[in-house]
Length: 84
Image (cartoon, rainbow, N blue to C red):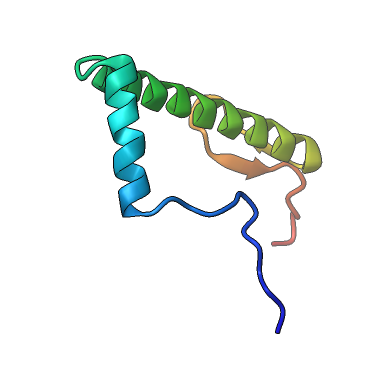
């Protein structure tokens, strides 16, 4: 049988997570942990927004025939058949 090795090492279970939380409380204090969590959440939101903008720019570069209408945000085809 082939043994699978986790990419990031073993994932901590219940008791290990309790020890990690205890160390975090001792290091940062109980009232600073919500502030750290809030700032981490805001940073993740900014990261997602930036990633989405870059993906949109890359999609526009890959498919130049589709333009986004700046006023409505609706995508329109530039090469439309007159017969259709």
